[in-house]
Amino acid sequence: MQISILGCGWLGLPLAERLVREGHMVKGSVTSSEKIEVLQAKGIRPFIVDLNEIEGDVLDDFLRDSEVLIIAIPPKVKQNTGLSYPEKLRVLLPSIANAGIKKVLFTSSTSVYADAPDIPVITEDTLPNPDTESGKQVLAAEQVLQSSTDFKTTILRLGGLIGGDRHPVYHLAGRAGIPNPYAPVNLADRDMIIEVIVQIIEVDIFGNVFLVVNPEHPTRKLYYTNEAKKHGLPLPKFSDAVTCVGKLVEGSVLFDWKK
Image (tube, rainbow, N blue to C red):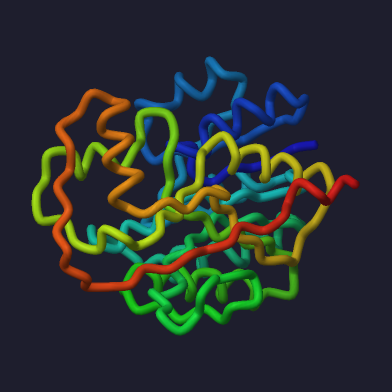
């Protein structure tokens, strides 16, 4: 099968490598020429695709003959450059339709759910209610893709991303006065995300929304204190201040699909 991955970064690149090992032909996009050789060395056909500066021929070539499109580009809302996140995805719609792609997988975020003191556990049945600009744009981007009748979109709402050289403890180590010590942690390990995506493609389940979150939900204080010790970092110091109660997101039971 040929698969196009829009965004070969922290998640998209190792995902592309895994799909190549599985025997798929993979096209991958980056936004700078410096990364072209990296993709080529890993058996990935590279393309430079910048959704702020669309080149129709390049985008059409990137999508042509692929059965599945995986969208793994971050929203980058705080950078506030170029098109908004949902606008970036909207410009993709005609090219996806023209390429005849019928299956799209979009890596979304649990930021589409606000902290929920009145909801003990967030599940697939919980209605999104974002209260941040990032969450609002991510939900709008989901809706852009779901609005198309030309293809089926599976949405993966990912917890906080962790894996490789990415770990939130590095941002908290040594800091003092960190609020919300007893809010639950909702993280999503990169290896787990990749396994889920590979399974979705193999089982051919499109047109759904799934939550991808690690099953463990320790408190922020317990988790980040232990992780700082494990990595030899200065311990974070939490205050008793409660600015939000947090939320507990229950991941979808994905690995039962093959049974």
